[in-house]
Length: 369
Image (cartoon, rainbow, N blue to C red; front, side, top):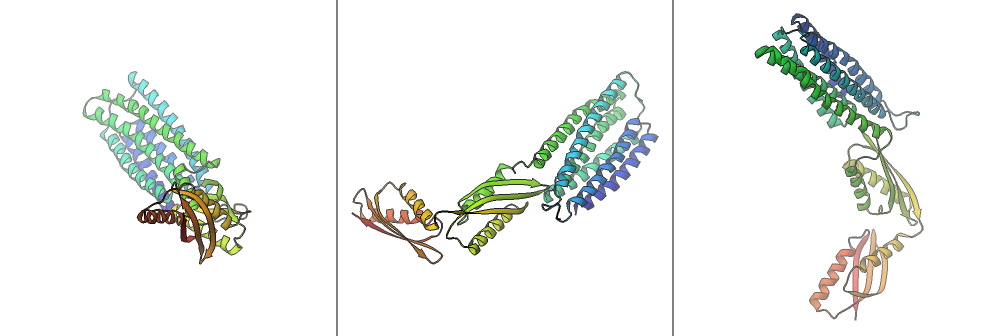
């Protein structure tokens, strides 16, 4: 199912539920249900807004929008969150006024069973729509659909309060109708908090806040573990709609040729996109380093060997090209005269550690007394 299709279903469902609730409210003598039906009609405006935004956000890139139109989703989600907040305010005020009217005996006491039927149908229809919409929104990482799903859920909450109050009033005592505005008020708080949460989330995206820490760490790990890409810095990320854009600087040694540098950037881009499906583009700015790869490798090897406590002195270190990497010839002296078995173990450990470094394919170690 596509975002457009689920929203069109929402349009038809809102029309059916609106007409049903208005008719049941009139014949069941319930102004509350009539008002709820009119509110469902107003949801059509939101649905049409979502359809319009979805069609715009999926437009191809052009000269004036080189990054695409994805942020239309974020702007629309922000506006929807404001509608949720406004609806929470409206529902809260209506709940308070209704509560006062019940206390003053101004609200009708005779309640028809049809009113209860209308509320139950609304809850079932809107809850199904909420679950389908939010499931699709999360699957496609579409913030606009997720926000619209919570708008459907707000309708469910408003109907739950009415249903509980009406059911208790019909089956037990008319006085239980007082629970309607009380429950509605508490559900208003949930709607308000949801609206505020979405507003903050979309605002962060619109001001280019970094993506969440977990995803950033994944990107940094991919870069560090890719041979030749250890010297990356200024890693920046941002979101646009449900898409992620990544850019960073990559320092390469001066012995890299253009072809090798291009291949490395393609490998990095492919790995990042495979690991994080939401990534739309990866921009890599290449920078030259004064040192050669051999110079950097020598420094790295010496630093690593300093951590081996059994080594007394590094007498000689030679690095030679070896197929697609390097061969290391190492001459060292140790602090003690170890047994042959112990020497073999030390050499094996040093070889293992050095081969963890990028491009080292072969290690020869000679121990001097």
